[in-house]
Image (cartoon, rainbow, N blue to C red; front, top):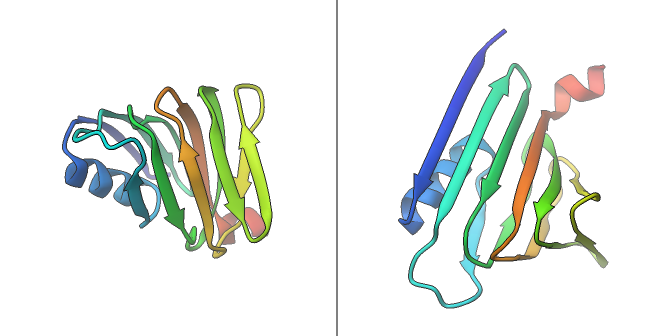
Length: 130
């Protein structure tokens, strides 16, 4: 089994965007609160077809993504995660989570400044086989 471990801490938007894209998914990132800096902290481990990580942007952001080839489960450990897929809107708080379907456009409309997420990515093919 392939195991990869990533730890990133940065205040640079481009480095933060690139790091999260490489570990999770390509996405469109938008700052919501006008801050000049991000304060990304990300700790992630990939175990075969599953990636588990803890992620905090440190500023309010919006993220548009199509979740290519994988499912994503985001569980806030603090703060709130506002999401939209089609006409469905969900607000997740600690104790609840949001599931994003593989290959389906969705938008995290507001990842609040104080939101830290436990994110679990499942390779779609492996999960569907199981």
